Image (cartoon, rainbow over all chains, first blue to last red; front, side, top):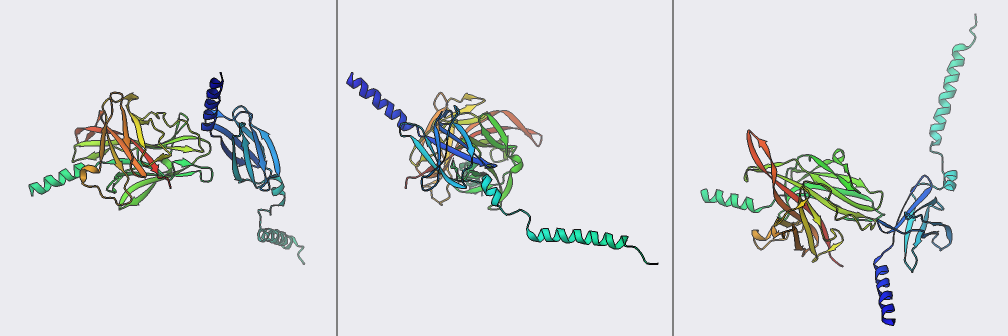
Length: 140
Length: 247
């Protein structure tokens, strides 16, 4: 009985050891999309995805669905993603966002440079000035 | 003079033609998802390129679907010969099989056309599955060993298929893509040859790190007309893979 238990336990450990957990992430328009899997057809179902800064402060936490997928708003431009697959299995990814968080978008400089704004204003002034000059009352 | 000509013909016939498809990475990680693909018609060990016309078909096979890369192909001159390249950005985990079906090449010395349907297999983000799936080429090698993340010295096994069925006793030529200028003891060592068993299965050891090409050469059931004459076609099922050494 003891031997049987040891054999079962050993087999179980061996199987888990071979099941390396993987983490794939990308972001679009301020949202982070995470996919976790052992192999392509073996998703990490209902696994916890933890987002942390580099002082290990938790930024957000989300659960994968039955396809091993989860999505969440980007909490920061640069952070760590960890998936916890149970039984000590986890994978961590140093993630640098390619799109901007909502907070960043508020503070981003405008796309239009000042020189273009000034040129636009000058064109408007010139246009109305010319119009005024054409329509000015003529002296007789 | 006759002896000289005969020896030249003999020397030429010893060089095996290989179509190649090679990628700058065969295991793709998230930090660099852009794959560069290189297509060349060459004698891999001697590094003697030949002109390659724009292929009939070039693409990537992913999860049962082929995507053409033909419109992305750019010609690249190498040793005054035309080779081709393309790029593909991987967006999700999985196994990606990059393939090319070249324009048949007429070899006057052998009185036949050569058409090597060639592929290489890339894993993205440790997906781990799908490398043993055929992509539906008329002639194709299916790996029985995972064809990426192989160490130099590993044994590689594969199966030769023609029209989806195993080719018993197929002959497979193997060449090393010799970028280091290694010298073979003599010409017979340049192209290694193995025979498949009754189920089309073969095994080869890969002693060096780098790219290895496997070409199972099959007499095709179609002929090609050229200058009023019908010529046989040597259809090649070609697979390229890369081995690495442990540092």
